[in-house]
Image (cartoon, rainbow, N blue to C red; front, side, top):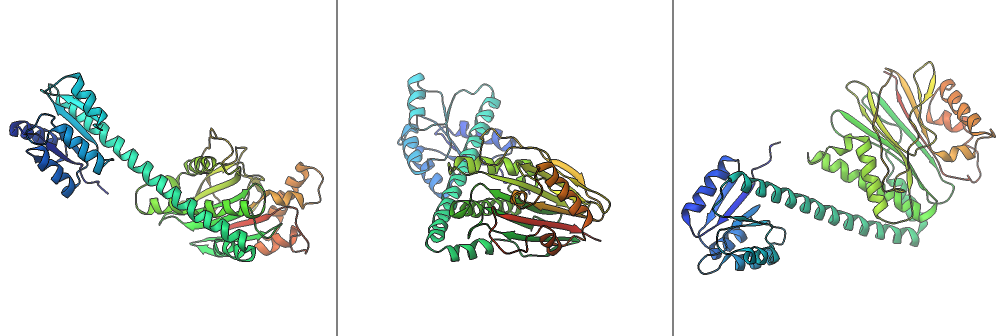
Length: 393
C-alpha cells in the first residue's frame, strides 16, 4: 500500500521564493501549498493541518517568530523549518528557542540541503508520533491492567474465570493443524499461559509462557502478555508493522515492554510461526525449558536452545530459527512445572522420560495428561501447562 506524499506549507511574502520552493519540492514528490504571509499561513495550518511548514522570518504583519510562537503552542508536534535570509545568529537562536526544528538560510545554494532537512524533520516527527501513540497505548494497557488487578484482588473466583476466558478454544483445527491445550494450576490463579491464532492467510502463531511466581501478580502478567500480542497482531492486520511474523523481534519487543514496567516479574516463552503453505516453522525461545519436543513419526527430539527469559535483562537478545516440519508430526510444549511432578531424580532422566513418552505414545492431550500423572487429584507444586500441536494429513 503506497503512502500519500507529505504535505508541505510554505509561508513567505515573496511569491518568487514560494514558487521556486514549490516547484522543486513537487518534483521531489511532496504536495505543496503556499501562504503569502504569516496570518494566512496560520489559518491554513489550522484548516489543512500539513505535515511540515517552511516559514520565512521577516514578513509584514505577523512575522515568522510570531508564527512560530502561535503554531508551536497550538500544534506542538508539527515540524516547522525556518527558511530566511535576514538577520543573523540571534534570529536563528530565537527561532530555535520558539520551537523551530531547523534553520536554513537564503539564498539556498543547494536545494538538496533543504530536502535533507525536510526529510530529517519528517522522520523525527514520525518517530515522535509513534512514540506518543506507543505511550498512549501503554497507558491504556496499564489502566486496563490496573482495573484487572483490582478485580482479581476483589474476587479470585471471577479472576480465574477471566483468565481462563483469555485462553484459546481447546482442540482447535486450522487447516491441517490441530491445537490442544490443558492448564493445571498450583493455586487459584496461574502464571502459565498459552495461545494460538491465525495471523493472516499464510501464517499461524502460537506460544507458551510461564511467568515467575504465582497468584494475582503473575496472572496479571499473563493478561498483559495477551494484550501486547493482540496489539502486534492488530498492527500487522493494518499493514503498519510485520513484527509479529518475526519471532525474535516479537520476543525483543515483549522484553522491552515488560522490563520497562518494573514489575519485578519475568517470564519464559516459546513463540512460533507456522507458514502452512510449505509447513515451515520459525521460532524463538525466551528461556523456555524444557524445550518443545518434536515427534516425526519415528523419533522424538528437543527443539530450541538456551536463551534468556523475557523481562529480566534489558540487554537480552533473541534469535529466530527455522525448521521444515515433517508432513505428519506432533509437537509437545510443556511448562517447567512438570519437572517437579516426575518421579525421576535427575534432570537428565526427566528429560529422557519426556522424550520416550512423546515418541512412544499415541499423542492426544488426554493421553499426555494420563501418562504424566496429571489426572490424579491433589495440589501441584507448580503450574503445569500442556500445548500439543499435531498434523496428520
